[in-house]
Length: 77
Ligand SMILES: [Zn+2]
Image (cartoon, rainbow, N blue to C red; front, side):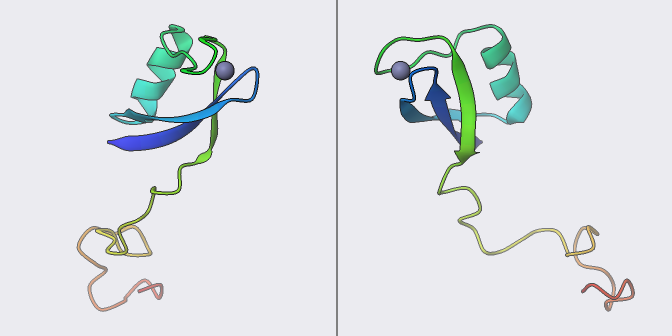
């Protein structure tokens, strides 16, 4: 799940939760998103919501290798 800040054509911000970016994209393209303030279906994604990245425990090493990169062989870990 991911929370995006959404902004309507009139500048009203609200947050909505999606399964992933594609889920957001699908709903945005289908115009099923609407502003809770004015009802506009002209919605754009704003900057990342504040709670994105609240977990400080990454599952992926800086180099992108899952479960760490075996002793830092890549020089990034
Ligand atoms: Zn609005």
